[in-house]
Image 1 (tube, rainbow, N blue to C red):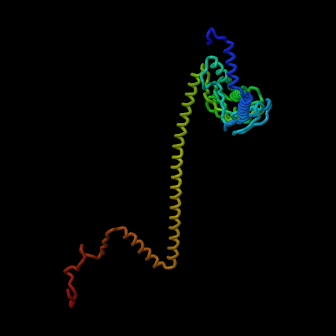
Image 2 (image 1 turned 180 degrees about the horizontal axis):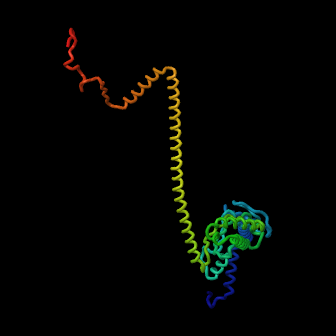
Image 3 (image 1 turned 45 degrees about the horizontal axis):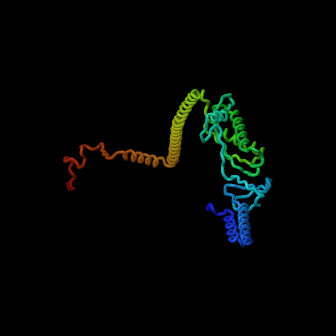
Length: 338
């Protein structure tokens, strides 16, 4: 701050003289400023002309708002300040939820979700159906420019097709056995409508989540379902017993038949063998009756005596019990040694 007795104008003149001395070479200073600005502008141009597309993306290039091309993943160049690159995730699976949300929701959200999930069945009952739609962007150009609200169209089409499919089934099919068929049919119909709209979406899968009856009738339905489960258990138990007993009985019957057939075959073979042997004996007997009769007698005796372990034959002319030596009364003839 200048002293009270100093002239402020003099101080200003001194400052101007100092600045003029510092920048006395004005042309060289201007060249440096221009070079710095040019370098900065070049860096901005280079930065705005180079862009990278991630592996899960495709880039749609617009020039003055008009579509130019679709670029694949990698490093690319565009005209700076004229081209705009819009990146669309085409390689990942996206998901829409109906009748529920994975994140939290308030009271108004609950009411909206109930409106989404309540569906009229073919037998005029109501089912609380929750499902998800997994989809993929197949054409980024069509996804961006074919319609204004792509996801809203997807949700509207999915709800319409799900209500149509559920409306052709009974409530029992929706709640129990028909879940897979319903999901497959809803996926097929939804894809057909989206193909007609030509909005560049591909439905990957439709999955039913929780399918329940409405809360007011839920206890009654649970009772009916429990009774049906008991009935199915009883039927399954009876089928298990049937599958256990019937094959066993059939096996025993087949075994008895095989045993009888084997016995009959053995008896027939034995009878045929006996008949053949008798015919051969008859032929031999007619040729040599005496020899054949003697041979048959000897064979019979051999078979009969062969049944005994020990056999003693006593001649009826023997007098003693132990006829080993002659009796003392029987003398040897004269001239023979006793």
